[in-house]
Length: 296
Image (cartoon, rainbow, N blue to C red; front, side):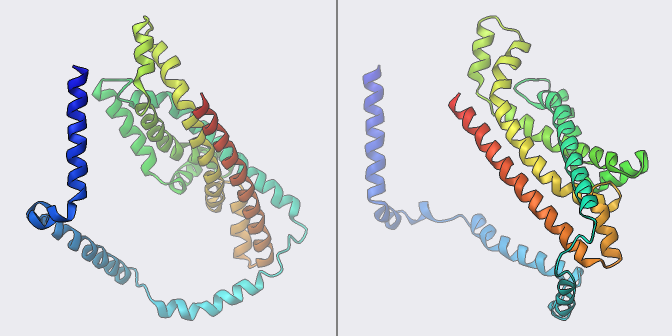
Protein backbone atom coordinates (compact mmCIF):
# COMPACT_ATOMS: atom_id res chain seq x y z
CA UNK A 1 0.00 0.00 0.00
CA UNK A 2 2.77 2.41 0.97
CA UNK A 3 4.78 1.44 -2.13
CA UNK A 4 1.82 2.20 -4.42
CA UNK A 5 1.22 5.57 -2.77
CA UNK A 6 4.90 6.44 -3.09
CA UNK A 7 4.88 5.50 -6.77
CA UNK A 8 1.80 7.65 -7.47
CA UNK A 9 3.32 10.60 -5.60
CA UNK A 10 6.58 10.27 -7.54
CA UNK A 11 4.66 10.13 -10.83
CA UNK A 12 2.68 13.28 -10.02
CA UNK A 13 5.87 15.10 -9.08
CA UNK A 14 7.52 14.10 -12.36
CA UNK A 15 4.51 15.27 -14.41
CA UNK A 16 4.49 18.61 -12.57
CA UNK A 17 8.21 19.16 -13.11
CA UNK A 18 7.88 18.32 -16.81
CA UNK A 19 4.97 20.74 -17.22
CA UNK A 20 6.84 23.55 -15.47
CA UNK A 21 9.91 22.97 -17.61
CA UNK A 22 7.83 23.39 -20.79
CA UNK A 23 5.59 26.17 -19.48
CA UNK A 24 6.23 28.50 -22.42
CA UNK A 25 5.40 25.72 -24.88
CA UNK A 26 2.19 24.94 -23.05
CA UNK A 27 1.17 28.61 -23.22
CA UNK A 28 1.68 28.61 -27.01
CA UNK A 29 -0.14 25.32 -27.59
CA UNK A 30 -3.04 25.98 -25.19
CA UNK A 31 -3.55 29.76 -25.02
CA UNK A 32 -7.15 29.39 -23.87
CA UNK A 33 -6.13 27.59 -20.69
CA UNK A 34 -3.87 30.47 -19.64
CA UNK A 35 -6.06 33.35 -20.83
CA UNK A 36 -7.76 35.47 -18.17
CA UNK A 37 -11.52 35.29 -18.13
CA UNK A 38 -13.42 38.36 -19.45
CA UNK A 39 -14.95 38.91 -16.01
CA UNK A 40 -11.53 38.93 -14.32
CA UNK A 41 -10.13 41.24 -17.01
CA UNK A 42 -13.09 43.61 -16.51
CA UNK A 43 -12.53 43.55 -12.76
CA UNK A 44 -8.81 44.33 -13.10
CA UNK A 45 -9.59 47.32 -15.34
CA UNK A 46 -12.72 48.51 -13.57
CA UNK A 47 -11.39 48.47 -10.00
CA UNK A 48 -8.71 51.19 -10.52
CA UNK A 49 -11.20 53.28 -12.50
CA UNK A 50 -13.78 53.06 -9.71
CA UNK A 51 -11.18 53.90 -7.05
CA UNK A 52 -9.98 56.97 -8.97
CA UNK A 53 -13.57 58.10 -9.55
CA UNK A 54 -14.39 57.75 -5.85
CA UNK A 55 -11.24 59.66 -4.89
CA UNK A 56 -12.11 62.52 -7.26
CA UNK A 57 -15.69 62.60 -6.00
CA UNK A 58 -14.45 62.76 -2.39
CA UNK A 59 -12.07 65.62 -3.25
CA UNK A 60 -14.90 67.60 -4.84
CA UNK A 61 -17.28 66.88 -1.97
CA UNK A 62 -14.70 67.91 0.66
CA UNK A 63 -13.72 71.04 -1.28
CA UNK A 64 -10.12 69.86 -1.58
CA UNK A 65 -7.86 72.61 -2.92
CA UNK A 66 -4.09 72.68 -3.35
CA UNK A 67 -4.30 76.47 -3.64
CA UNK A 68 -5.74 76.73 -0.13
CA UNK A 69 -2.97 74.50 1.20
CA UNK A 70 -0.31 76.60 -0.54
CA UNK A 71 -1.80 79.86 0.73
CA UNK A 72 -1.91 78.50 4.27
CA UNK A 73 1.71 77.34 4.39
CA UNK A 74 2.98 80.74 5.50
CA UNK A 75 0.56 80.68 8.44
CA UNK A 76 1.85 77.22 9.33
CA UNK A 77 5.38 78.61 9.26
CA UNK A 78 4.40 81.48 11.56
CA UNK A 79 2.73 79.02 13.91
CA UNK A 80 5.90 76.89 14.03
CA UNK A 81 8.15 79.90 14.66
CA UNK A 82 6.03 80.95 17.65
CA UNK A 83 6.59 77.46 19.17
CA UNK A 84 10.38 77.94 19.31
CA UNK A 85 11.98 77.45 21.76
CA UNK A 86 9.77 74.96 23.64
CA UNK A 87 9.50 75.99 27.29
CA UNK A 88 7.37 74.80 30.25
CA UNK A 89 7.41 78.30 31.80
CA UNK A 90 7.17 76.99 35.34
CA UNK A 91 4.53 74.33 34.63
CA UNK A 92 6.76 71.28 34.22
CA UNK A 93 5.42 69.58 37.34
CA UNK A 94 1.80 70.21 36.31
CA UNK A 95 2.53 68.82 32.84
CA UNK A 96 4.21 65.75 34.35
CA UNK A 97 1.21 65.05 36.59
CA UNK A 98 -1.15 65.41 33.63
CA UNK A 99 1.02 63.08 31.56
CA UNK A 100 0.98 60.53 34.38
CA UNK A 101 -2.81 60.83 34.45
CA UNK A 102 -2.89 60.10 30.71
CA UNK A 103 -0.78 56.97 31.24
CA UNK A 104 -3.11 55.89 34.07
CA UNK A 105 -6.16 56.36 31.82
CA UNK A 106 -4.58 54.25 29.08
CA UNK A 107 -3.44 51.53 31.48
CA UNK A 108 -6.70 51.22 33.41
CA UNK A 109 -8.82 51.33 30.25
CA UNK A 110 -6.73 48.71 28.47
CA UNK A 111 -6.57 46.40 31.49
CA UNK A 112 -10.32 46.64 32.14
CA UNK A 113 -11.14 45.89 28.51
CA UNK A 114 -8.81 42.88 28.42
CA UNK A 115 -10.20 41.41 31.66
CA UNK A 116 -13.82 41.80 30.49
CA UNK A 117 -13.21 40.61 26.92
CA UNK A 118 -11.19 37.50 27.81
CA UNK A 119 -14.04 35.30 29.15
CA UNK A 120 -16.59 36.59 26.63
CA UNK A 121 -14.18 35.77 23.78
CA UNK A 122 -14.56 32.07 24.56
CA UNK A 123 -18.32 32.43 24.01
CA UNK A 124 -17.59 33.95 20.59
CA UNK A 125 -15.21 31.15 19.54
CA UNK A 126 -16.83 28.47 17.40
CA UNK A 127 -14.47 25.74 18.59
CA UNK A 128 -15.52 26.36 22.21
CA UNK A 129 -19.25 27.11 21.90
CA UNK A 130 -20.83 25.21 18.99
CA UNK A 131 -24.19 26.90 19.58
CA UNK A 132 -24.51 29.37 16.69
CA UNK A 133 -26.83 31.72 18.61
CA UNK A 134 -24.39 32.13 21.51
CA UNK A 135 -21.26 32.91 19.52
CA UNK A 136 -23.25 34.98 16.99
CA UNK A 137 -24.66 37.10 19.83
CA UNK A 138 -21.22 37.48 21.43
CA UNK A 139 -19.64 38.54 18.14
CA UNK A 140 -22.36 41.09 17.41
CA UNK A 141 -21.91 42.50 20.91
CA UNK A 142 -18.22 42.99 20.18
CA UNK A 143 -19.12 44.64 16.87
CA UNK A 144 -21.41 47.14 18.60
CA UNK A 145 -18.72 48.23 21.06
CA UNK A 146 -16.02 48.25 18.38
CA UNK A 147 -18.01 50.32 15.89
CA UNK A 148 -18.21 53.34 18.23
CA UNK A 149 -15.02 55.43 18.28
CA UNK A 150 -13.18 56.13 21.52
CA UNK A 151 -13.91 59.85 21.22
CA UNK A 152 -17.66 59.17 21.00
CA UNK A 153 -17.47 56.88 24.03
CA UNK A 154 -15.66 59.67 25.89
CA UNK A 155 -18.41 62.18 25.10
CA UNK A 156 -21.05 59.68 26.24
CA UNK A 157 -19.30 58.85 29.52
CA UNK A 158 -18.63 62.52 30.28
CA UNK A 159 -22.40 63.03 30.30
CA UNK A 160 -22.81 59.99 32.57
CA UNK A 161 -20.01 60.32 35.15
CA UNK A 162 -18.89 63.90 34.53
CA UNK A 163 -15.63 65.43 33.36
CA UNK A 164 -12.34 63.85 34.35
CA UNK A 165 -10.04 60.87 33.84
CA UNK A 166 -12.62 58.30 34.98
CA UNK A 167 -14.70 59.02 31.88
CA UNK A 168 -11.57 58.63 29.74
CA UNK A 169 -10.72 55.24 31.23
CA UNK A 170 -14.29 54.03 30.68
CA UNK A 171 -14.22 55.26 27.08
CA UNK A 172 -11.04 53.35 26.28
CA UNK A 173 -12.37 50.27 28.07
CA UNK A 174 -15.57 50.26 26.00
CA UNK A 175 -13.82 50.76 22.66
CA UNK A 176 -11.13 48.17 23.40
CA UNK A 177 -13.64 45.65 24.74
CA UNK A 178 -15.01 45.17 21.23
CA UNK A 179 -11.58 45.09 19.59
CA UNK A 180 -10.13 42.68 22.16
CA UNK A 181 -13.16 40.42 21.92
CA UNK A 182 -12.75 40.06 18.17
CA UNK A 183 -8.99 39.49 18.34
CA UNK A 184 -9.15 37.11 21.31
CA UNK A 185 -11.91 34.97 19.79
CA UNK A 186 -10.02 34.71 16.50
CA UNK A 187 -6.88 33.67 18.39
CA UNK A 188 -8.87 31.00 20.24
CA UNK A 189 -10.31 29.66 16.99
CA UNK A 190 -6.82 29.48 15.47
CA UNK A 191 -5.45 27.20 18.21
CA UNK A 192 -4.32 23.64 17.55
CA UNK A 193 -7.13 21.24 18.38
CA UNK A 194 -4.82 18.32 19.18
CA UNK A 195 -4.26 19.51 22.75
CA UNK A 196 -7.97 19.66 23.57
CA UNK A 197 -8.57 16.34 21.80
CA UNK A 198 -5.92 14.70 23.96
CA UNK A 199 -7.45 16.10 27.14
CA UNK A 200 -10.92 14.96 26.06
CA UNK A 201 -9.60 11.47 25.23
CA UNK A 202 -8.12 11.18 28.72
CA UNK A 203 -11.49 11.98 30.29
CA UNK A 204 -11.12 15.73 30.79
CA UNK A 205 -14.20 17.93 30.94
CA UNK A 206 -14.90 20.90 28.67
CA UNK A 207 -13.57 23.21 31.37
CA UNK A 208 -10.34 21.19 31.51
CA UNK A 209 -10.00 21.41 27.73
CA UNK A 210 -10.32 25.19 27.85
CA UNK A 211 -8.06 25.64 30.90
CA UNK A 212 -5.23 23.30 29.90
CA UNK A 213 -5.68 23.03 26.13
CA UNK A 214 -6.68 26.48 24.87
CA UNK A 215 -5.56 29.04 27.45
CA UNK A 216 -1.81 28.18 27.34
CA UNK A 217 -1.88 28.53 23.55
CA UNK A 218 -3.63 31.91 23.41
CA UNK A 219 -2.09 33.68 26.41
CA UNK A 220 1.13 34.76 24.61
CA UNK A 221 -0.90 36.12 21.68
CA UNK A 222 -3.29 37.92 24.01
CA UNK A 223 -0.45 39.42 26.05
CA UNK A 224 1.18 40.73 22.88
CA UNK A 225 -2.08 42.30 21.71
CA UNK A 226 -2.75 43.93 25.09
CA UNK A 227 0.73 45.49 25.11
CA UNK A 228 0.25 46.83 21.61
CA UNK A 229 -3.13 48.33 22.48
CA UNK A 230 -1.70 49.95 25.62
CA UNK A 231 0.89 51.89 23.64
CA UNK A 232 -1.80 52.89 21.15
CA UNK A 233 -4.15 53.95 23.93
CA UNK A 234 -1.58 56.36 25.33
CA UNK A 235 -2.12 58.39 22.17
CA UNK A 236 -5.89 57.89 22.35
CA UNK A 237 -5.94 59.10 25.96
CA UNK A 238 -4.25 62.31 24.83
CA UNK A 239 -6.94 62.92 22.23
CA UNK A 240 -9.95 62.21 24.45
CA UNK A 241 -8.51 64.58 27.04
CA UNK A 242 -9.27 67.39 24.60
CA UNK A 243 -13.02 66.85 25.10
CA UNK A 244 -12.69 66.86 28.89
CA UNK A 245 -11.85 63.23 29.68
CA UNK A 246 -8.80 64.14 31.76
CA UNK A 247 -5.10 63.86 31.13
CA UNK A 248 -2.74 65.99 29.15
CA UNK A 249 -5.26 66.72 26.39
CA UNK A 250 -7.05 69.26 28.58
CA UNK A 251 -3.83 71.27 28.92
CA UNK A 252 -3.24 71.11 25.17
CA UNK A 253 -6.71 72.48 24.44
CA UNK A 254 -6.37 75.37 26.87
CA UNK A 255 -2.83 76.31 25.80
CA UNK A 256 -3.69 76.28 22.11
CA UNK A 257 -6.80 78.39 22.78
CA UNK A 258 -4.76 81.11 24.52
CA UNK A 259 -1.86 80.75 22.03
CA UNK A 260 0.76 79.73 24.61
CA UNK A 261 2.58 77.97 21.80
CA UNK A 262 5.95 77.52 23.51
CA UNK A 263 4.25 75.55 26.26
CA UNK A 264 2.31 73.62 23.61
CA UNK A 265 5.58 72.67 21.91
CA UNK A 266 7.12 71.56 25.22
CA UNK A 267 4.07 69.48 26.08
CA UNK A 268 4.08 67.85 22.64
CA UNK A 269 7.76 66.98 23.09
CA UNK A 270 6.96 65.39 26.45
CA UNK A 271 4.23 63.30 24.82
CA UNK A 272 6.51 62.25 21.96
CA UNK A 273 9.30 61.16 24.31
CA UNK A 274 6.86 59.26 26.55
CA UNK A 275 5.24 57.46 23.61
CA UNK A 276 8.65 56.59 22.15
CA UNK A 277 9.82 55.08 25.45
CA UNK A 278 6.58 53.11 25.85
CA UNK A 279 6.79 51.87 22.26
CA UNK A 280 10.36 50.68 22.83
CA UNK A 281 9.60 48.89 26.11
CA UNK A 282 6.37 47.40 24.75
CA UNK A 283 8.07 46.07 21.60
CA UNK A 284 10.77 44.40 23.72
CA UNK A 285 8.14 42.83 25.99
CA UNK A 286 6.12 41.61 22.99
CA UNK A 287 9.19 40.01 21.43
CA UNK A 288 10.03 38.36 24.76
CA UNK A 289 6.49 37.00 25.13
CA UNK A 290 6.32 35.73 21.54
CA UNK A 291 9.82 34.24 21.80
CA UNK A 292 8.94 32.33 24.95
CA UNK A 293 5.73 31.03 23.39
CA UNK A 294 7.70 29.64 20.43
CA UNK A 295 10.14 27.89 22.77
CA UNK A 296 7.37 26.13 24.70
